[in-house]
Image (cartoon, rainbow, N blue to C red):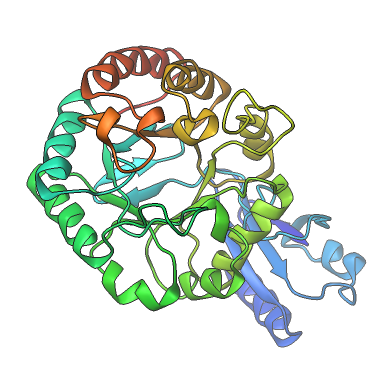
Length: 337
């Protein structure tokens, strides 16, 4: 349930109302806009009398929310949320490009790619240290050593770092990571999501390859319900009957999510198709559809990459793509810092 306050409402009466609602066992989500102030009621509102609320002289209107996700709901927070990480902004008109290799392989490789993507205009650095793989025989990442290499590359270039977490047990290792990524296979790892709700660090939440948008938003709700409202949603392609590509990028998810939630929405075109030549057109489509950013895999020698070389751009290819992204993003009114 959402309460829209009247402009110039008596602050003393508003505080009194808020206390009454808390005493009823409800949690409050406050949203202060330029022209409108909202109080979102979270909890069992079935016994809350709408007529009583509507009759109060501080209330403009009362609206019930049908969707099960509350904190992530745009009705509760009409303005776009802007997430800040390492001095970079995502959402609310700020467009970000996250780039780097699928996995950290060596210190030299990681640093070289980091310098290349920064030179081309990437705002954040990605790299996998802990890798969830379908096959137990595939390269699983370098773990803590790889994470150290990634952080050193970030420090050398000044780029904020994005990397994936596999288990809540690894959280102490992620103290200096700027954005923690939750991969598609862990989107509904609810115990992990609960733990991430307890920290105060941005979380990049990838859509599960077979999950609906409501399920994605409910996973975001798990994190936000724990107190961490810094969530970035990522569309990375879903599994369909099509076999000519790795996954099918759900472009329609971008405007639909933007209508349902105030959270930033980015796209991972690399994992969507899993094919290098498709990364550019999917990236441009994502920008045009209203995404707040993209995450692109870049490797200095894709043919010898230990993971996902088939979909990784070369530094030269990434540089050419960035020139187009900057122009297109500017055309659609996005800011790339």
